[in-house]
Length: 256
Length: 311
Image 1 (spheres, rainbow over the protein chains, first blue to last red):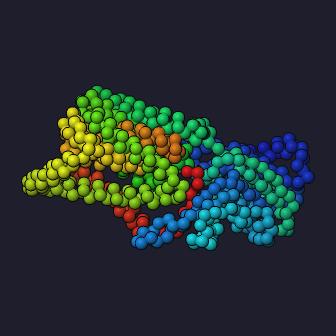
Image 2: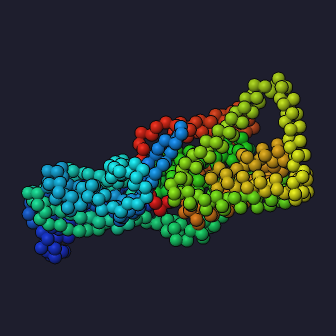
Image 3: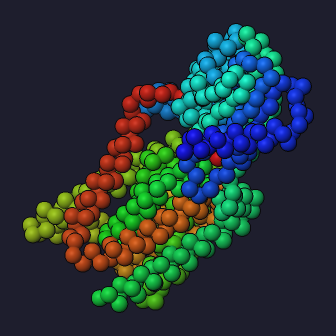
């Protein structure tokens, strides 16, 4: 299956290469996605994304996938009498909901930490750009560590340091999984090419992640017309409750 | 078999949620207790955000109360004047509580309020049901219950007598009682708060009407169903409108499961012993309360938690 997928990916890559006719050749980096749309349907349990491309000069490839920025609340529990309760909250804004860093080998072997930080290729640099408000005095001095740890546990901050495959040094591809519970919106897909620890080229792409079909309709109606949705859905629940009860009761009567 | 919940923004096992619905319908048909107060904590245990669990349960209660109300309406078991007084009380506090939910959720304190309320309510109802069912299972033949019942009747009669000074005395024809309108208003007000926290409230309304307000059992059940239907309908619509916390996929799955479970429960109720089932229900309630309590008392492995601000 993976051989087939790979073959298909390469076929598409060749097609795209011809089609783009070197429009971005000056950057020395060409990339594309097998599918630039992740569709969240009722049965969505996560999805693999296949990225592929080529670079004019051999070296290392780093891919940074980021979802749109979103506000997050980081709460901290503390002891109140015998109970452990939430005692403080920090509002963290201007941080992507999801950050994936993919590379062909460990990032610290590709470039110095300072170089990686400058290009936003560490979680630390991502969080350094955040805007925080709330209660920084109440045990949030090292909030970045907790934030990063929780995001990693949720599978939303990930380093996949061997997921980029290099073939003959200039062709690359990556196949990475997105989790079932993920932020929606237009994701950025930044591809960086490094050679001897120096950035040689960079290419930006996008990936659309959103609900489709009934999921999209439901979440849109529930958000944009919440009043109407609430009334209609509740009436539907009442009608369904009565109908099911009557139907099942009749069925019960027939059997007995 | 996983299914994605569009409002909770998570995937859950469809069969597990369906099984929750079946169990709640089954238990409510067997024991006469609605089950909302058990469903909400179960949903929270499987990771549904408390706000969504609390916001979705009223839709299920509205659906199942509608099914029950229909037959009780035909049997004439509803006191509409009494029901209206209850509803004025429940709507007032429920609407207030839904707005309070919004403020609490934004401040990050909603989870704490929900957990404390559930420990108190589940613990209290669990202990009372446990004591009653133990008495019923082991002391039925001993006839020791008779003097106790007489004593409690005397106590409630004198309580009712003491409340005769309250204003707004009126006749409730179907309930065959004359009392102050303040009493159903207060009871309704308490039920309104419980309902907006995803607990239904029938488990408080029915015994309060029977034992405290001395309403005949059938009228108490019929009128309570009307109260559940009308309160849950408003709460469900408002939770969706104001807090965006009603998950339609979750609600539909639960309603279907519950309807199936209720029919199954109705068939089983003739065979299974009611007292032992109430004992089982009491143990489940106490187990859930203890689980929440232990969670509050033990030092957490992770001090921090991360949530979206939008929800």
